[in-house]
Image (cartoon, rainbow, N blue to C red; front, side):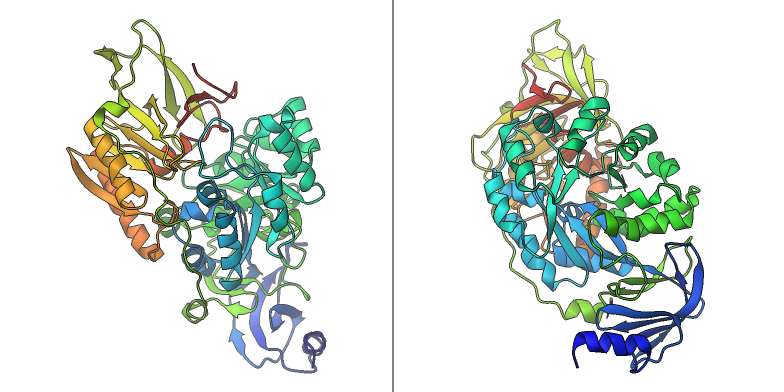
Length: 563
């Protein structure tokens, strides 16, 4: 018998279904009703609902609620600091059955090899991993990346079965001013899905950006910004990452009326946050607790996400849809009891049955050796110094101007300031930039990282020059990662040898190491909850207002380097 014949016969009840979830209540995302009945599954497809079915295998779901599997509509798996295989094992048991990733972190290190790594890994995972092709590698001309991807590099991958379209188009000034490279990419993917990235953009500029064919966007940080984007036809993705925490600000916008046009995403979330709080399940719990209607929240987590990204085969528990199902204790608590991904029960047996693929981008740190003198930043006396102002929980920064004391002509950290530098690590030009940052709370030592969005050069924040040099040089010895140094000693570190971005260890090990790193950073006086991710976003020159790359300080509002 064919698969089609099996589905028809099992749906009619002429043959026992392969699997039946018995006696649960199904959340109907159209009416909002909770309806009692069985769910019959044939292979990877739902074939029967709201009736009584016999199954070759049956699972009793009495007293439980069945909802569609959750869809993370935008994330960078690299920011979880683990491989796609460990990410799968970390979040799929929480009900995340589909993830749409943009592999531009690894692509900035090793180009199309990084994108193909995720495409090659996706068929081996329990979850369904989809890929949007990285549109901005590098994100701007004001940074040095390990690769440059043009439209001609992306086009050969456009028809891959796991590819949805073009990932977040971060270079919105390039769109508005019709940069030839940006135009070539937009034209190459015209008619396909193009994901957006336009923080604080509004008015006619937003009109023009949307008119370029961009349909989804995750950078809204206020209800006003989100509402304007919704009114102009964009699907707004509510984001709650480890640093970018916009959920509370956007919760008032999520209603049963707006929910068909809103989705959920995590963007950048590490295993420590996932362990302590959760992933999309945490967002669902939190949004409902804040007063959002459960129907609106579960729509945004599944059906609306599927519709926004053209995944017509999922998002509802209805016949003909992919059997992505989460069995919950309650809608409000959103604790997954059983998860099915494509009809497969998510458990250790399913994970053990996977095959893996080799890591790529090993030995990717080619930074020059630095000394304490490498970080001196000589300034003229009597001149206001630009200072990056960190806003906890946001990747937007302030552009501060301060009178900074000088020691032998060198700008000195005082009154809550710390030094910040970015060191080119791809072996291209050896650039080193210098600046000052306010908001870390650091009083001694240094922290350094090869995770610096999106070029992923080495970023370092510190008080002591010798400690900064030790931290930077240590990263070259461990193939990249995170390091905390004080008094000439390494207090904690996490090696990320896959591109300087991902560990090859289990997510539990990474989580434990992050606990030690956080404690070590706090011993330096750091007050930020996620100092390493906050450091990473200091280097992203497409997020207002003042940032730093290996080229120097960047005035993002003017989209220009400071003199």
